[in-house]
Amino acid sequence: MLLLTGAGSSVLDGGLFLPSDSRGPVQADSASDDEPSPDRRRAAWMAAAQAGDRRAYERVLADSVALIRAVARRRGVPADTLDDVVQETLLTVHRVRHTYDPARSYDAWLAAIAGRRAIDALRSHGRREGREVHDDGLLQRQPGGDDASAASERDDQARRLRAAIAELPPGQRQAVEQLGLAERSLAEAAARTGRRTGALKVNLHRALKALRGRLHGEP
Image (cartoon, helix red, strand yellow):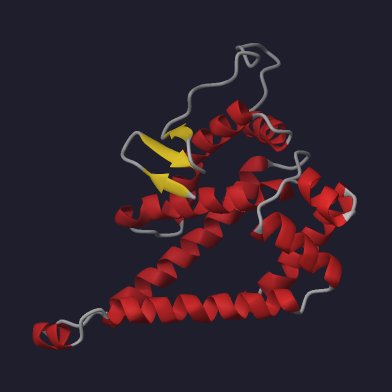
């Protein structure tokens, strides 16, 4: 779980320290005519992170913060909600990091995730505004109403997600359970399921596409 701990740092998964700004390029990325673009540098860091490089993972997450904020601003996310979008996006990246293809643009992959989290934040912001009640007496008579509504909505979303996962073909459901829900690495999931890592990645891609279609009406 990602917890923002202040203006300068955050903690990911029980101890991974992440400064809010980039620590700079790795030593190998010294200035030269052949220096990779920032996008390719981040792609290389994520590829290394997928292979278990903790330092590269810290760096790519740190380098992603500014990109996430830029996407959220373009989507119209209020300034006081930007940190929430950053947190939710980094948490999603952590959960689905196995799905990133290093041959593709990291920035585009991240922007797609950040865009969805920004839309979620805007929808949540709109629902909160719609639920606001300015009658102080009514608020005193109905304490915790918003909390109960939010909890009910989360429960409903969780039930819908569980039902959608249960309807997936066995291979896709297994990939979601192992890689998405249990957050196991590809190697761990392959050892547990007896499936090849390539098959798990393909099944996860297909499962996520199917779930988006069922839950959000996305193609």
